[in-house]
Image: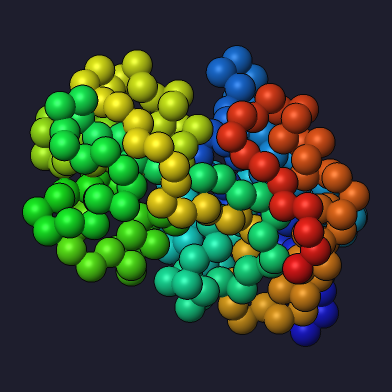
Length: 240
C-alpha cells in the first residue's frame, strides 16, 4: 500500500471531525465553516498531500472513534486512550488538557482524591476520553454515562450524580449552567490528543506520526491554539 491509498484513498483527505469538543472544532454560525485547531491541522495535512480536505462531521468524539473501522474517515483528532487503540493508530501527543470535577456546593467532597469512594456517582459524557479513563481506573465510584457533555451537566443538575467530570476549560465555561456546582482543585488526569488513523493503515500511521512531531516542533500547534483564542489547551513541546 502507498501513502495516498491509505491516507487519501478517495482522492480527498476525509477528516473525522466532532463538534462535541469546542477546544478543537467550532462551526461558524453564519457561514457554517468549520474552524479551530483541528480544522487548521487538517487543512495543513491536506495541503502537504496535495489533495482537498473533506470534513466528515460527527456530534461527539465517541461517534468518530466508533466509525474508525467503517472506512468513512482517514484521519481524526482524538484523545489518546487505550480503549481506542484497538481500532486506531495514534500519533504522539500534540496537546494536553486537564480534566477535573465539579461537585454540588453542599457536597462534603473537597478534593479530587476523595472522588473514588463507594456510593459516589460521576456524570461523564459517554465515550469521551476522560470517561474511558475513569471507567478503566476507578475502583469504588460509579460512572453514570450521559449523551454528550450537556447531557452530563443535565444529569448532575438533576441530582442523578454527585460529581461532574469534564475537561477543565469546558467545565469553567459551563459554570453558568451549573448554578449549584463548584470546581474541585486540581486535575484527575491530563488528556492528550493526537492524530489517529484506522489501525489497518501502517504507512499512513507513520506519516501522521512524523507530521505531528513536525507540527509540535515548528510551533504550528501552539500558534493554532493562540490564533483561535483557545484557553486551557496547551501544545506539547517535547518530541516523543
